[in-house]
Length: 337
Ligand code: PHE
Image (tube, protein in one colour):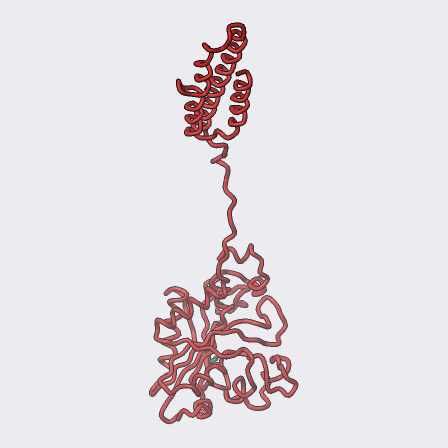
Protein backbone atom coordinates (compact mmCIF):
# COMPACT_ATOMS: atom_id res chain seq x y z
CA UNK A 1 0.00 0.00 0.00
CA UNK A 2 2.89 2.29 0.68
CA UNK A 3 3.83 1.84 -2.98
CA UNK A 4 0.36 2.80 -4.13
CA UNK A 5 0.52 5.95 -2.01
CA UNK A 6 3.85 6.82 -3.56
CA UNK A 7 2.49 6.20 -7.06
CA UNK A 8 -0.44 8.52 -6.56
CA UNK A 9 1.90 11.24 -5.32
CA UNK A 10 4.11 10.88 -8.41
CA UNK A 11 1.03 10.91 -10.58
CA UNK A 12 -0.12 14.18 -9.03
CA UNK A 13 3.32 15.75 -9.40
CA UNK A 14 3.40 14.78 -13.06
CA UNK A 15 -0.03 16.28 -13.67
CA UNK A 16 0.59 19.69 -12.13
CA UNK A 17 2.38 21.36 -15.08
CA UNK A 18 -0.45 20.36 -17.45
CA UNK A 19 -3.26 21.81 -15.40
CA UNK A 20 -4.15 25.06 -17.07
CA UNK A 21 -7.88 25.57 -17.37
CA UNK A 22 -10.79 25.54 -14.95
CA UNK A 23 -11.82 22.21 -16.48
CA UNK A 24 -8.39 20.71 -15.76
CA UNK A 25 -8.68 21.78 -12.13
CA UNK A 26 -12.12 20.28 -11.79
CA UNK A 27 -10.91 17.00 -13.33
CA UNK A 28 -8.11 16.95 -10.78
CA UNK A 29 -10.63 17.35 -7.93
CA UNK A 30 -12.82 14.54 -9.29
CA UNK A 31 -9.88 12.22 -9.64
CA UNK A 32 -8.30 12.69 -6.22
CA UNK A 33 -10.51 14.56 -3.81
CA UNK A 34 -14.05 13.15 -3.89
CA UNK A 35 -15.58 10.18 -2.03
CA UNK A 36 -15.00 7.89 -5.01
CA UNK A 37 -11.59 9.43 -5.71
CA UNK A 38 -8.41 7.37 -5.67
CA UNK A 39 -7.18 8.68 -2.30
CA UNK A 40 -10.45 8.04 -0.48
CA UNK A 41 -10.45 4.48 -1.89
CA UNK A 42 -7.13 3.90 -0.15
CA UNK A 43 -8.57 5.27 3.09
CA UNK A 44 -11.46 2.79 2.71
CA UNK A 45 -8.97 -0.04 2.57
CA UNK A 46 -7.21 1.08 5.79
CA UNK A 47 -9.49 -1.10 7.95
CA UNK A 48 -8.05 -4.26 6.34
CA UNK A 49 -4.46 -3.27 7.02
CA UNK A 50 -2.65 -5.28 9.81
CA UNK A 51 -2.79 -3.38 13.10
CA UNK A 52 0.96 -2.74 13.43
CA UNK A 53 1.17 -1.15 9.95
CA UNK A 54 -1.86 1.10 10.44
CA UNK A 55 -0.13 4.08 12.12
CA UNK A 56 2.51 4.37 9.40
CA UNK A 57 0.13 3.90 6.46
CA UNK A 58 -2.46 6.16 8.05
CA UNK A 59 0.13 8.86 8.44
CA UNK A 60 1.32 8.51 4.84
CA UNK A 61 -2.26 8.57 3.59
CA UNK A 62 -2.95 11.75 5.52
CA UNK A 63 0.16 13.34 4.09
CA UNK A 64 -0.97 12.34 0.60
CA UNK A 65 -4.44 13.77 1.10
CA UNK A 66 -3.01 17.02 2.47
CA UNK A 67 -0.69 17.22 -0.50
CA UNK A 68 -3.55 16.73 -2.97
CA UNK A 69 -5.72 19.27 -1.17
CA UNK A 70 -2.94 21.86 -1.03
CA UNK A 71 -2.19 21.34 -4.69
CA UNK A 72 -5.84 21.79 -5.59
CA UNK A 73 -6.11 24.93 -3.50
CA UNK A 74 -3.03 26.58 -4.92
CA UNK A 75 -3.93 25.68 -8.52
CA UNK A 76 -7.34 27.20 -8.02
CA UNK A 77 -5.96 30.37 -6.49
CA UNK A 78 -3.40 30.75 -9.23
CA UNK A 79 -6.05 30.30 -11.90
CA UNK A 80 -8.41 32.83 -10.33
CA UNK A 81 -5.64 35.39 -9.97
CA UNK A 82 -4.57 34.98 -13.58
CA UNK A 83 -8.02 35.26 -15.03
CA UNK A 84 -8.66 38.45 -13.09
CA UNK A 85 -5.31 40.16 -13.44
CA UNK A 86 -4.69 42.91 -15.99
CA UNK A 87 -2.73 41.59 -19.00
CA UNK A 88 0.93 42.41 -18.99
CA UNK A 89 0.63 45.04 -21.76
CA UNK A 90 1.10 48.77 -21.43
CA UNK A 91 -1.88 50.12 -23.32
CA UNK A 92 -0.67 53.70 -23.01
CA UNK A 93 2.50 52.96 -24.99
CA UNK A 94 2.26 54.74 -28.37
CA UNK A 95 2.01 52.28 -31.28
CA UNK A 96 4.57 51.97 -34.02
CA UNK A 97 3.42 54.05 -36.96
CA UNK A 98 3.61 52.08 -40.20
CA UNK A 99 4.86 53.78 -43.34
CA UNK A 100 2.10 54.36 -45.86
CA UNK A 101 3.08 54.91 -49.46
CA UNK A 102 1.38 57.61 -51.49
CA UNK A 103 1.12 58.70 -55.10
CA UNK A 104 3.87 60.91 -56.43
CA UNK A 105 2.87 64.60 -56.56
CA UNK A 106 3.50 64.69 -60.33
CA UNK A 107 1.18 61.72 -60.85
CA UNK A 108 -1.44 63.34 -58.59
CA UNK A 109 -1.32 66.50 -60.70
CA UNK A 110 -1.50 64.52 -63.92
CA UNK A 111 -4.51 62.53 -62.68
CA UNK A 112 -6.31 65.69 -61.66
CA UNK A 113 -5.63 67.36 -65.01
CA UNK A 114 -6.80 64.25 -66.86
CA UNK A 115 -9.98 64.13 -64.75
CA UNK A 116 -10.86 67.74 -65.52
CA UNK A 117 -10.35 67.27 -69.28
CA UNK A 118 -12.29 64.00 -69.25
CA UNK A 119 -15.20 65.89 -67.66
CA UNK A 120 -14.88 68.44 -70.49
CA UNK A 121 -15.37 65.63 -73.01
CA UNK A 122 -11.78 64.61 -73.92
CA UNK A 123 -10.64 61.00 -74.40
CA UNK A 124 -7.19 59.84 -73.27
CA UNK A 125 -4.58 58.59 -75.77
CA UNK A 126 -0.96 57.55 -75.36
CA UNK A 127 2.07 57.11 -77.61
CA UNK A 128 5.57 55.62 -77.38
CA UNK A 129 8.46 57.33 -75.51
CA UNK A 130 10.85 56.19 -78.25
CA UNK A 131 9.73 58.03 -81.34
CA UNK A 132 11.04 58.51 -84.85
CA UNK A 133 12.07 61.77 -86.40
CA UNK A 134 9.02 61.72 -88.61
CA UNK A 135 6.44 61.82 -85.78
CA UNK A 136 8.46 64.01 -83.44
CA UNK A 137 9.47 66.63 -86.05
CA UNK A 138 8.71 66.15 -89.79
CA UNK A 139 4.98 65.57 -89.55
CA UNK A 140 4.74 68.47 -87.09
CA UNK A 141 6.00 70.87 -89.72
CA UNK A 142 9.48 71.37 -88.25
CA UNK A 143 11.75 72.51 -91.08
CA UNK A 144 14.73 70.17 -91.68
CA UNK A 145 17.17 72.69 -90.21
CA UNK A 146 15.09 73.58 -87.10
CA UNK A 147 17.40 74.09 -84.10
CA UNK A 148 15.23 71.91 -81.83
CA UNK A 149 16.33 68.86 -83.83
CA UNK A 150 19.89 69.53 -82.88
CA UNK A 151 21.89 67.16 -80.70
CA UNK A 152 21.79 69.75 -77.93
CA UNK A 153 18.05 69.37 -77.43
CA UNK A 154 17.24 65.88 -78.60
CA UNK A 155 18.46 62.54 -77.31
CA UNK A 156 18.97 60.54 -80.48
CA UNK A 157 19.04 56.78 -80.02
CA UNK A 158 20.61 55.86 -83.35
CA UNK A 159 23.41 57.72 -85.02
CA UNK A 160 21.39 57.98 -88.25
CA UNK A 161 18.96 60.13 -86.23
CA UNK A 162 15.94 58.04 -87.14
CA UNK A 163 15.05 57.03 -83.55
CA UNK A 164 14.95 59.42 -80.61
CA UNK A 165 13.41 60.00 -77.19
CA UNK A 166 10.40 62.20 -77.84
CA UNK A 167 11.03 65.82 -76.94
CA UNK A 168 7.32 66.57 -76.46
CA UNK A 169 3.94 64.79 -76.48
CA UNK A 170 2.92 66.44 -79.79
CA UNK A 171 3.91 63.35 -81.89
CA UNK A 172 0.94 61.60 -80.25
CA UNK A 173 -1.26 64.18 -82.05
CA UNK A 174 0.03 62.78 -85.36
CA UNK A 175 -0.64 59.19 -84.31
CA UNK A 176 -4.16 60.07 -83.15
CA UNK A 177 -5.03 62.08 -86.28
CA UNK A 178 -3.74 59.30 -88.53
CA UNK A 179 -5.62 56.68 -86.51
CA UNK A 180 -9.09 58.22 -86.40
CA UNK A 181 -11.41 60.54 -88.25
CA UNK A 182 -12.66 63.89 -86.89
CA UNK A 183 -14.30 64.80 -84.61
CA UNK A 184 -11.22 64.10 -82.45
CA UNK A 185 -11.06 65.29 -78.86
CA UNK A 186 -8.12 63.77 -76.98
CA UNK A 187 -5.63 64.46 -74.24
CA UNK A 188 -2.26 62.72 -74.31
CA UNK A 189 -0.29 62.58 -71.04
CA UNK A 190 3.26 61.25 -71.00
CA UNK A 191 6.97 61.53 -70.31
CA UNK A 192 9.27 63.60 -72.51
CA UNK A 193 13.04 64.03 -72.76
CA UNK A 194 15.35 66.93 -73.59
CA UNK A 195 19.08 67.16 -73.58
CA UNK A 196 19.10 70.15 -71.25
CA UNK A 197 21.27 71.27 -68.36
CA UNK A 198 19.66 70.28 -65.07
CA UNK A 199 18.87 73.16 -62.74
CA UNK A 200 16.15 74.42 -60.40
CA UNK A 201 13.78 75.06 -63.32
CA UNK A 202 14.48 72.28 -65.82
CA UNK A 203 15.22 68.57 -65.99
CA UNK A 204 16.25 66.29 -68.86
CA UNK A 205 13.16 64.13 -68.25
CA UNK A 206 9.73 65.52 -67.40
CA UNK A 207 6.01 65.20 -68.20
CA UNK A 208 3.56 66.93 -70.48
CA UNK A 209 -0.11 66.67 -71.20
CA UNK A 210 -1.12 67.38 -74.76
CA UNK A 211 -4.61 68.29 -75.91
CA UNK A 212 -6.12 68.13 -79.39
CA UNK A 213 -9.54 68.99 -80.76
CA UNK A 214 -10.21 68.64 -84.50
CA UNK A 215 -13.66 69.13 -86.00
CA UNK A 216 -15.54 71.39 -88.40
CA UNK A 217 -15.57 75.02 -87.26
CA UNK A 218 -13.15 74.74 -84.32
CA UNK A 219 -12.05 78.26 -83.40
CA UNK A 220 -9.40 80.07 -81.38
CA UNK A 221 -12.20 81.33 -79.14
CA UNK A 222 -13.02 77.73 -78.20
CA UNK A 223 -9.36 77.07 -77.41
CA UNK A 224 -9.27 80.07 -75.09
CA UNK A 225 -12.58 79.16 -73.49
CA UNK A 226 -11.58 75.55 -72.86
CA UNK A 227 -8.18 76.39 -71.40
CA UNK A 228 -9.60 79.08 -69.11
CA UNK A 229 -12.34 76.71 -68.00
CA UNK A 230 -9.72 74.08 -67.23
CA UNK A 231 -7.36 76.51 -65.49
CA UNK A 232 -10.09 77.93 -63.23
CA UNK A 233 -11.05 74.41 -62.13
CA UNK A 234 -7.42 73.52 -61.52
CA UNK A 235 -6.32 76.73 -59.79
CA UNK A 236 -9.53 78.25 -58.43
CA UNK A 237 -11.69 80.97 -59.91
CA UNK A 238 -9.59 83.79 -58.43
CA UNK A 239 -6.45 83.13 -60.49
CA UNK A 240 -5.80 85.41 -63.46
CA UNK A 241 -4.70 84.24 -66.90
CA UNK A 242 -3.40 85.78 -70.08
CA UNK A 243 -2.61 84.56 -73.59
CA UNK A 244 0.60 85.79 -75.16
CA UNK A 245 1.49 85.42 -78.86
CA UNK A 246 4.16 82.79 -79.48
CA UNK A 247 5.50 80.45 -82.12
CA UNK A 248 5.38 76.68 -82.70
CA UNK A 249 5.95 75.10 -86.13
CA UNK A 250 2.82 72.94 -85.76
CA UNK A 251 0.33 75.66 -84.77
CA UNK A 252 -0.71 78.90 -86.45
CA UNK A 253 -1.49 81.22 -84.79
CA UNK A 254 0.35 80.13 -81.61
CA UNK A 255 0.13 81.40 -78.06
CA UNK A 256 1.34 80.75 -74.56
CA UNK A 257 -0.91 80.66 -71.51
CA UNK A 258 0.34 82.45 -68.40
CA UNK A 259 -1.08 82.35 -64.88
CA UNK A 260 -0.62 85.15 -62.33
CA UNK A 261 2.27 84.18 -60.04
CA UNK A 262 1.07 82.07 -57.09
CA UNK A 263 3.79 83.41 -54.81
CA UNK A 264 3.55 87.19 -55.23
CA UNK A 265 0.04 87.36 -56.66
CA UNK A 266 1.31 89.37 -59.65
CA UNK A 267 3.55 91.85 -57.79
CA UNK A 268 6.76 90.34 -59.19
CA UNK A 269 9.17 88.02 -57.37
CA UNK A 270 12.08 85.58 -57.81
CA UNK A 271 9.86 82.69 -58.97
CA UNK A 272 8.19 84.68 -61.77
CA UNK A 273 11.41 86.49 -62.58
CA UNK A 274 9.74 89.76 -61.53
CA UNK A 275 7.16 89.63 -64.32
CA UNK A 276 4.16 88.68 -62.14
CA UNK A 277 3.31 85.85 -64.60
CA UNK A 278 4.21 82.18 -64.98
CA UNK A 279 4.02 80.32 -68.27
CA UNK A 280 2.00 77.08 -67.99
CA UNK A 281 1.08 75.97 -71.52
CA UNK A 282 1.80 76.35 -75.23
CA UNK A 283 -1.14 76.29 -77.60
CA UNK A 284 -2.52 77.31 -80.97
CA UNK A 285 -4.61 76.34 -83.99
CA UNK A 286 -3.32 73.16 -85.68
CA UNK A 287 -1.23 74.18 -88.71
CA UNK A 288 -2.87 73.30 -92.07
CA UNK A 289 0.32 71.44 -93.09
CA UNK A 290 -0.06 69.16 -90.08
CA UNK A 291 -3.71 68.41 -90.84
CA UNK A 292 -2.79 67.69 -94.48
CA UNK A 293 0.05 65.38 -93.46
CA UNK A 294 -2.47 63.36 -91.44
CA UNK A 295 -4.96 63.11 -94.29
CA UNK A 296 -7.39 65.68 -92.88
CA UNK A 297 -8.62 68.39 -95.29
CA UNK A 298 -7.78 71.81 -93.79
CA UNK A 299 -10.46 73.41 -95.97
CA UNK A 300 -13.13 71.39 -94.16
CA UNK A 301 -11.65 70.87 -90.71
CA UNK A 302 -9.80 73.01 -88.20
CA UNK A 303 -8.39 72.20 -84.80
CA UNK A 304 -6.66 73.47 -81.74
CA UNK A 305 -3.85 71.95 -79.70
CA UNK A 306 -2.22 72.70 -76.36
CA UNK A 307 0.53 71.29 -74.19
CA UNK A 308 1.05 71.72 -70.43
CA UNK A 309 4.23 70.93 -68.54
CA UNK A 310 3.10 68.84 -65.56
CA UNK A 311 6.09 69.48 -63.30
CA UNK A 312 5.58 73.22 -63.63
CA UNK A 313 1.93 72.87 -62.64
CA UNK A 314 2.91 70.61 -59.72
CA UNK A 315 5.38 73.22 -58.49
CA UNK A 316 2.68 75.88 -58.64
CA UNK A 317 0.29 73.81 -56.54
CA UNK A 318 2.76 72.51 -53.99
CA UNK A 319 4.98 75.55 -53.59
CA UNK A 320 8.06 73.43 -54.39
CA UNK A 321 10.42 75.94 -55.97
CA UNK A 322 13.19 73.58 -57.15
CA UNK A 323 12.10 71.02 -59.76
CA UNK A 324 14.88 68.63 -58.70
CA UNK A 325 13.15 68.04 -55.34
CA UNK A 326 10.44 66.17 -57.23
CA UNK A 327 12.85 63.43 -58.32
CA UNK A 328 15.28 63.04 -55.45
CA UNK A 329 12.86 60.56 -53.87
CA UNK A 330 13.39 62.04 -50.44
CA UNK A 331 10.48 60.68 -48.36
CA UNK A 332 10.48 63.84 -46.26
CA UNK A 333 9.33 65.66 -49.42
CA UNK A 334 7.15 62.92 -50.90
CA UNK A 335 5.25 61.99 -47.74
CA UNK A 336 3.73 65.49 -47.62
CA UNK A 337 1.44 64.63 -50.53
N1 PHE B 1 4.83 70.78 -77.89
C1 PHE B 1 5.01 72.12 -77.37
C2 PHE B 1 6.20 72.12 -76.40
O1 PHE B 1 6.66 71.08 -76.04
C3 PHE B 1 3.77 72.60 -76.63
C4 PHE B 1 2.60 72.76 -77.53
C5 PHE B 1 1.70 71.73 -77.67
C6 PHE B 1 2.37 73.93 -78.20
C7 PHE B 1 0.60 71.88 -78.50
C8 PHE B 1 1.31 74.10 -79.02
C9 PHE B 1 0.41 73.09 -79.17
O2 PHE B 1 6.68 73.16 -76.01
